[in-house]
Image (tube, rainbow, N blue to C red; front, side, top):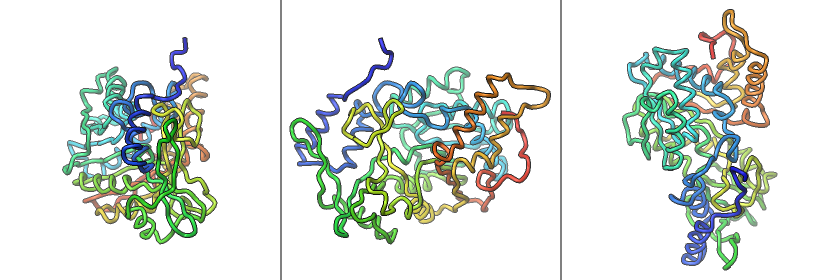
Length: 390
């Protein structure tokens, strides 16, 4: 029997959403996506089963190799140094997925940055009880869970260190809009008694209209687009939570001119199931992921308005290269790699910086309450960085 059988849909989730569609005579796509992904019992992220990794539906950078965590660790260590090496440095990871980044970062610090490791306090913000269970399991092997704590929401204030997120914002629920004859319409979801269907209606919120007014542009005529109102709100919450330190974000996305280009007719909404993609949000309800690309222009403006100072925006390929990811291919001292380990490392490095894959993820950094710092991840590497052991 297949350990991970194929799925059609979660009937309980379908009935919950259908009942709401009937009761409210249709719901916004944003509300549909919220239920499909985050319903506390049946939503994709809250239901049992692997989401990330080879046995799941997609790979994120931490699942590819611990090398990613080592590079992030290098950047966090530099942030700690920029803060004067405080005795307590908090890393607050929002949406920690499988827990691989936390596990591998703590392991790297224990081997290569013991002073930093002593100061490190790791906190995970996670709303899914199922994912918390998976994260605790990932962190239990070397008793890392003793170094890590969990909470449902970002604290309101008081963080000194770095708030970190990896592919969090692109999984937040979005409004979908369509430009017809120069006017914005919104995608709603209705239930016809046997299936879900999309309908174009007037905007459910003036916020969608104001979103594009602030950008000074609209999607192209005849184009669908996603409006992620949750991402700038999250940035505001993160800025308020940060007393002194940094915000480091990794996500798929573009600046507004590229994201809302006239040739992007269908927007960027994508669904993931068993490492395949599709554009049907109603397929395999509760068993497939949904994402849309992030608008980095709006995030940058939101960060500025929230009192954050910008430190850099780079592709993940450049960020990891600047931090010395190719060190992973060089043995340290007299040691040498077995051929199979070298091949595995080379494949991992290639995957993490692939400009058509994970390498096109954007890394963005901000700070608060500190002098502007030049972070190694956001500048070209012109000299060897210390502690090359991985």
